[in-house]
Image (cartoon, rainbow, N blue to C red; front, top):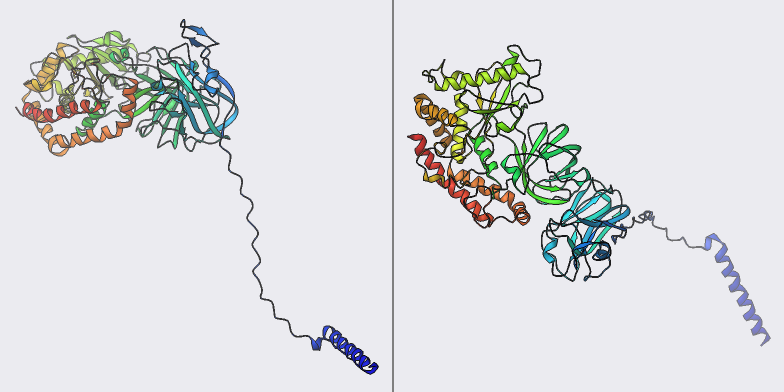
Length: 607
């Protein structure tokens, strides 16, 4: 038994010895399986910056000073105050004491890019948020304000009405500007945004039309045609991706009859020459035509297109725009050239006060046969009683020798029309009047049915030229069957100018008679020019109706807002012969006129 135990111990020792050798002796170690080279693991992506958090913004409540106490219609700072629009209670509201030009908002303390707004109307007053404008600014007086949103529909009561904001600029001050004549009457207001300066890569445009913003000094209303108010003017275009900005722009009223309308026309005068939108001219002065009595909002646009097709020497530039004045939507306007001397407007020599010797004294002059001439500072009355305003040189620059020269030259032209040899090619009126320009003007005015054809006539005389050139055609708000005394134009069996319409002087009508009715060769030229226009220049019914449809489509969104602001579709305003009751009805009047007028002129001119 002892032997057996000894054998076992020896065997165990041998096994342990062999095991030790296998661990230490390389000859007894099997080759390891080679490792496959591994691609190094890429460095992990850095943690992305967390997205800025859109949050409800808080700040100091700011706004119009006084609220109204409806119990006695008195000023208050205790009842219906601006703090109510931030209290989370739909049953309280802010009602301003003033009926218009009032607002409520927040000083956020620093700049935020506004991404969303919320609002709720006063209970029972859901329509009063329509046309309210949300603005952002970085000056506490909002003199640099830009629109963030325009509310186009009635609000929903007892809930927040939310809207996304598409504007990339950061603002410290934000506000809700009340529509006209509604005292704010707002229950709740919210702003959501992210902190940041932002940029101007994307701004808010009210409709597909460019948005023109005027912020006057001290938010003054424009009440004068003489006194300019320094203003900051913006034009936002190209779907909000382009911004024009001009500080210290002088803005005043303009126009004659149109200045009397509730929707006012304006003139802009920049400190330096500017080329606006796609206009050809670079100039200081521009006009905003209001088109109050023209409910199609396109009579001037159509007349200018007809002028282009008639190949007039100069056709004023115009572009429809939406206008915001001191935070209030004012409607659809036309941004137009100022009719003045400029190489891309009236392209004649611009005179200096020292131009008092020939040939410098011979031009250039811009005058207007003008029924309002007696109200101007620089005008004369011809030997036969025609009132003429001298537009250029203007009233501040013209000197005595220049005034005497152009007065005398106009009288020579006038006398030649009534002379016995009026038709003489060399010594008759053609010596002083460019006949072709007169005939083009005549065709445009008669086709458009403008009762103001000879109420106002622009004419120019350039240096070293013996002839007055007629044009441009301008002011067609009562044309195209939109004047009650001439309506309907189709009832006349003669040219419109021969009827009892607006005319600066009977002399002007008689001058037209000499040229159009008595001068045989001039009449032949008129017939030839009309036929060419009909055959080659797009003066046909189908083409003009198509242009009306295209323009109506362009104006569609803006016209709807315009007639929310100016509720006149059911009213006769200015010289309206009728009120169609809808925008579509007004377009039908325009189309019916064109359909009848073109063939009527085929007859009248062809006789």
